[in-house]
Length: 95
Image (cartoon, rainbow, N blue to C red; front, side, top):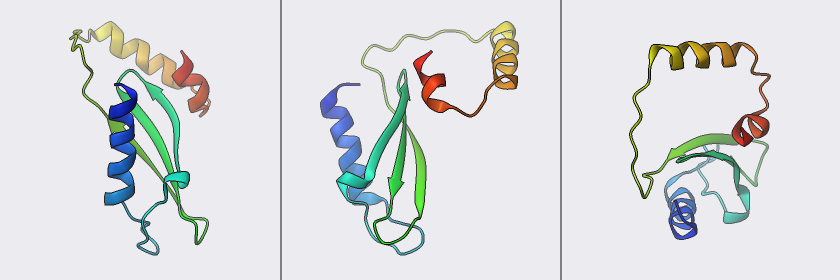
């Protein structure tokens, strides 16, 4: 995903999502990209009027699609990785 596509996602978030508590739109400065992994993006949305926030995941279409079959070993490895996951998404997305 390139910068133009990411900007389009930000605009879509701003125009289509609203705070669940007060119904106001999110301002661009209150939409924060918290992490990314391949074609997935984790955003945190903050409402200016109160401490409410939302976390959303956006999955984009990669430019060059490559398919990989997930094996039973992949599932077991993922399960083991989850056992040691400490909740730090920043570090997890760096791997």
